Length: 218
Image (cartoon, rainbow, N blue to C red; front, side, top):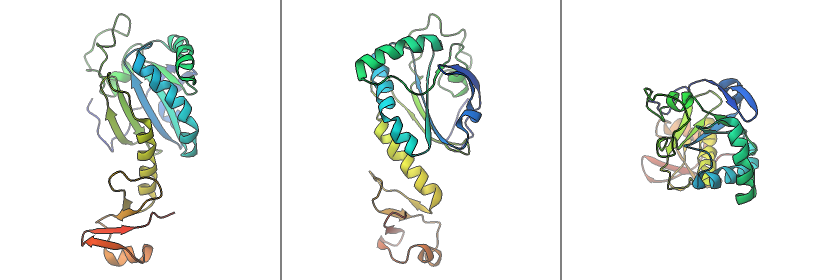
């Protein structure tokens, strides 16, 4: 299945470390980060899961839930959590999906739909493509997708930055420029005519006719 930004995130029912969940119901009216892993007890993923646990208060401030996925059973995730806490100082404090039948991985296009069998006997290399971050909005649409190789740890501070941008631009007719950080100037989107823009933004800097720079709205 080929997913794109703007598609509805496929719903599913899965076993997790906190019991069975229905994904869309679990998200509710929140934002969500779903991030996947090719195998338990892998070194790069160990660092990622612990770091995300440490960042969870920041995601909570943004009304954003975290859920992980690995193609191993949920009870094995619980064992891995002990190592994660020992190595990073933070045990996962969010659900971890046990994708033993590879169903979610295939549903989200991280593994080919015709992949046979389940997680048993598969190596991290077999599941190397199960290294994706999905940001899903309260409307259940996919807002962001990022895929990483197994050799490169993910930058979850960047995911927070993107969520700040997504939430801002969902409420105001603005876009955020390169390397934008929360609180910095933003750009009025080109689709807004000048007359309409002035009602919300009385003044702007305009180095080019198509670029109208304003302070970030509150």
